[in-house]
Length: 410
View (cartoon, rainbow, N blue to C red):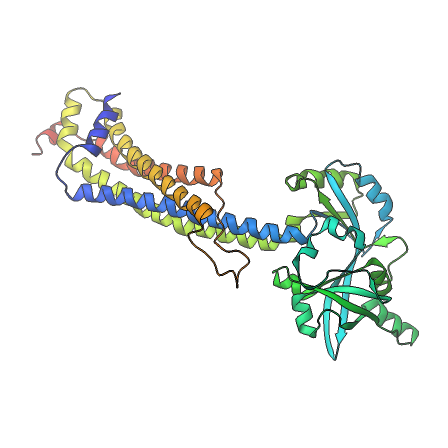
C-alpha cells in the first residue's frame, strides 16, 4: 500500500477526539448514503410504473401500425400483407377500417373513433377483449344487426349498456345525404360489451365492430383499408422489424411502433423521471459540499503534518493524492452503503410489498418497482465522481503548503 493511501485511511479511521470536522464528515457520509438510496428507490419506482403503463397500452395496441401518409386508405392490402408475412418476426397481420363516427342513443350524441376489424383476427393483434367489464366482447352480428363494443367512458356519456340498440352515422353518410338530397338511415347496432383499458382518453373515444359495418359507414374504395396492424413474436425487436418493413414499403406509407403511437405520453414519463433525478440528486450535491468543507478544514488542521511530510521528501502529488484518496474513500463507502440500502428497499418492496395500494381504486395492489442495473451504475458513478471532484480543491491547497510556514505555524 502506498503511503498517500495509508495516510488517507489513517486520517479517516484514526482514533481521535470527536470534534467538529468529524461531525461534518459523518454528516457527509450519511447524506450521500441517503441520496444514493433515495435516487435508486425513486427511479426504480418510475421504472415500475412505466413498465405497468407499457403493458396496459401494448395490450390493446398493435406492436406496429402501417398507415398511408397521404389520403385515408391503403390500396391492395392483401398483396402488402403477403409481402410482409415473409418477415419471420411477424406473428399476426390484420387490416382495419378506422374513422370518426357519431353514435346516437335516446337523444344523446357523441363523436367517437370506430375500429372495424375482422372478428377472427381481433384477438391475434390486440388484447382489448381482456379489458371487458360488462357483457361479452363480440363484434359479429346479433339478430342480423352488427354488434359493437364500447369504451367505458363512451358508454357512460350516451348511457348505454350491453343489449341496448344504438344508431351509428358517419361523415360519409352525412355527405351522401347532402349530395343526393336523401336522408340515409343510420346503421343500427347492438351493444355487446363495455371495455375499460384505464386509459381515459382511449375509453372515451373508442369502440370496436366488424369490417362489414365499417364498410357500410365509411364506404372505402374497393379493396382498401385504413391501417394494417402487426403483432410480433418478440416486442423487443420492434425497431428492427420496423426498419425491415420500411425497406419493403413504398415511401407513401408510414410505419409507427407502439412507442410512436403514444410518444407524447412516454415523453412526459421520461421528463418526470429526469426531473425526479435532478431533484433527488440535490441531496447528494449538498452532502458533497460537506465533504469539500470537511476536507478543507482537515487541510488546515493537518497543516503541520503536511509540512513534515514535505520536509521528509514527499512530493506535491503525494500530498495531493492523500486528500483525493480521502474524498474518494468517503465517496466509495457512502455510495456502497447507499446502493445496498436502495436495493434493500427495492427488493423488499418487490418480494414483500411493504407499500400497498387500495385494490378497489387501483389496478395494482402495491407500488411497482423494477431495478435496472444501468440506473444503479449511473447513480453510483455520479456520486463517486462528485466526491472525487469535491476533494480536488482541498488537495491542491494542501499540495501548495509552504514547508517552513507550516512547521512553525504552531
